[in-house]
Image 1 (cartoon, rainbow, N blue to C red):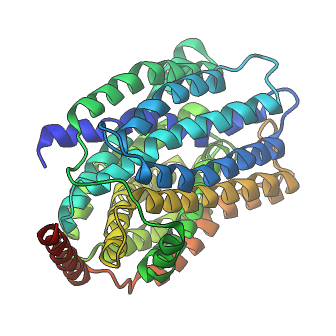
Image 2: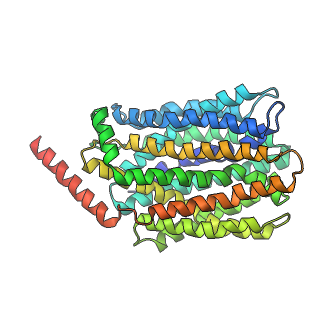
Image 3: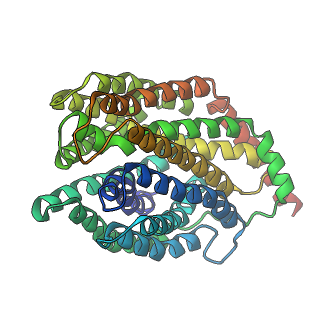
Amino acid sequence: MALDRLGAYGILGLPLAALGLPLVVYLPPFYSQMPGLNTGIVGILIFVARLFDVVSDPIIGSASDRLQTRYGRRRPWIAAGTPLLMLAAWFLFIPPDNAGAAYLLVWSILAYLGWTLIYLPYTTLGAELSSDYDERSRITAWREGFFVLGTLIAIMLPALTQRLAGGAGAGLAAIAVFLVVALPIATALFLWRVAETAGENASRIRWRESAQLLARNAPFRRLLIAYLFNGAANGLPAALFLFFVTAILGGSEVTGGIFLAIYFLSAVAGLPLWLRIGRNWSKHRLWCASMLWVSFVFVFTLTLGEGSYIGYGIICVLGGTCLGVDQAIAASIQADVIDEDTAAGGDGRAGLYFGLWGMATKLAFAIALGIAYPVLWLAGFDAAQDNDATALWTLAVLYGLLPVIIKLGVVALMWNFPLDRRRHAELQENIGRERGATSASA
């Protein structure tokens, strides 16, 4: 795949990532300190919004499979989601002083809907751009690389804005301005340069047969469970990051921005390193190796206390190197699992599969957020005041120990994953033979 096309594909991930991090890290603490809201209420509201988001994934994914236009199956959804996401992000990140629970819930739901309308067809199309085992990893690596760059923007922009203007609200407003400028430009470049693969027609398979094929796809079921638990493991520290930095380390939001920058810069450096290490491995073993390493590193957060900036910085460097490969390789495995479905008689239903995986990931994060925030509240944690030993111990366990336990379970599940290089080559041979027979018959 040519570099210019890879760049046009990957760059759409930059504004999406610039929105994604604030939704998870900055927005909940910001709303938690608004009049009439607290940590427990905000956690429940975002949990409800995420549940709506979870349901929308397979619906939009399946609809994109069955849509047939002269512009393709995936691209019209991306074009439609762009203005919705811009509008919702603007109101969500720049709320009025009297914004309450209903305001947060409505605009969160609309922001998640706009995100899904773009992100789900975007990632699905990435899986359809190539059928090669290693090229798929290259495509997802470009996308995740731009995601990391977008995340760095989401870290540095609020920090610089807060230093100049002061207050978390100014930082969120800066993200909103960046999004409404960058997203339409990136979308236009994507739609101009990234055409859909020729020969991908709308799915016509019946719902009953579709369900039967899904049920028989054992690698899909296994990967879906792994995605569910890995999403929870990633969601816990993401949701609790600012609380950990301010309450455990004694830092500020600016300090947190510095640590996030270190973490994601390490991800940029670590992705090509991990891909080089595992260039002859099967993808699932490379994914497991990265999860084992980050688990070993991350458990040391339990030893940190007030002022442990150097120790936490080292953890950010060593653990951050795994972020890119954790995202890119897992997404590449998604595309390979769809080949099991195609070889068994499926007809281009990548959208449904990515919708179900997206549903699992979002459900996992919703569960993590819906549990973590209320548990912190029950333990007496309050982001606006000093906390006792019980509240801080609860925060440390939720942030540093529980994700490690979950990831070790995912490693046990995926270590002997049946879809390796050899099996993928067999699938591609069978699919090519079937398509050749179909063409000859036609």
